[in-house]
Length: 328
Image (cartoon, rainbow, N blue to C red; front, side, top):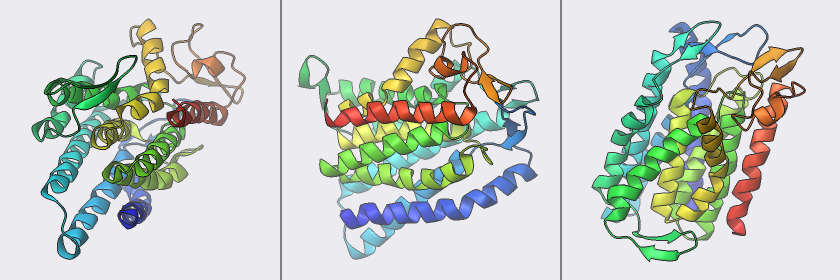
């Protein structure tokens, strides 16, 4: 399985390397772009980088299935798990892409799907995971230990976890390189954790995502040439959920997701009306709010930090919490 994990990583990296430069040109040609909020001139940047990352994951796993089918037989359960995960990931990426396409573009604001529509639509992406009863019903419950929850797992916990994960990553966004950088941290950590614990499918999924993200990060870091869009944030949230379900590592995934849980609580204080990003002022990013309604506001409310510094701050926070999976 070491070879399989390495194989999907290389293929995913290669596909992303080929697709992303072409995708940037194509998105410009069809005028699918959005304002980069934290810049002085608010430039219009191509959006929906999740397409390239999803393509890397899909092609890498389909190639692996092809090779394994003809040269090394996979078990039926493994086939079912892989295809259920791929269908869910592609579905949620498509939903995110719809949101990106529907975005209303102007120099002042950008709006897509309504907040209540997003979790409602992602329910459909969870159906393949529910249908095949993916995962192990014995889970770790904080303060109560491990318990077998039976049908409650596939029928309730899987859809709730999937919907929550896909939407929570979308909450903490808005700075060049932040979503991709944080994604590199938690997919890398969870991938290594899964591998060392013998969850090779979960590890392959994590590192396949990591490899494609590595290429995307190069183009998305400050100053960004392409933005992730909901197609990527939804995809990354779904990847976290699938890693947790397939690898039976809900506890590790939950710990790595703590920054997004904190973000949810902060955004709830504003009734989910506050934005993470701010506005450009004297080379720095200034928050629109006096109170802290988002993790980046810790820095941006002072008006003393650049967008690059805010992005690195967010990646650093994710690195701290993701590292806790090894000791908690």
